[in-house]
Image (tube, rainbow, N blue to C red; front, side, top):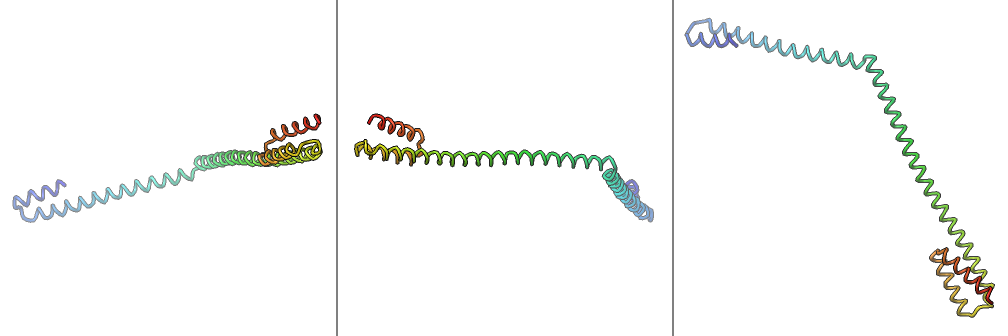
Length: 164
């Protein structure tokens, strides 16, 4: 840069051929400095790349990657175990609910049949209106699937049978 300033100063002073030579020398020096700067940057980048590659393939890094892979796999297995456990619990609860509903329907059906048999057995001892009312209550409670009301109706029919 100083060479170019000197060449500019000499051209002001009207010195003949010296400013041209100094300008060319200044341009060559500036170009060579830029080339050295670019070369140093490329050499630094190459050196960093070589170090990174060597570090990546070093035994310590390979061991670290294997350890991280094993830990990630173990975490994945734990999550999978947890979600399978949750899924099994859900399906077991669903199955238990279905079985409970089926069992309730079965017992409700058996209770309803027992009440029907009791009603038929006491039909002759009851008034027609009472019999019809008991049948209607029986049908209504069976449709509602009201086990408590059906048991109470059965008790009521048993009491009617004992009284007559």
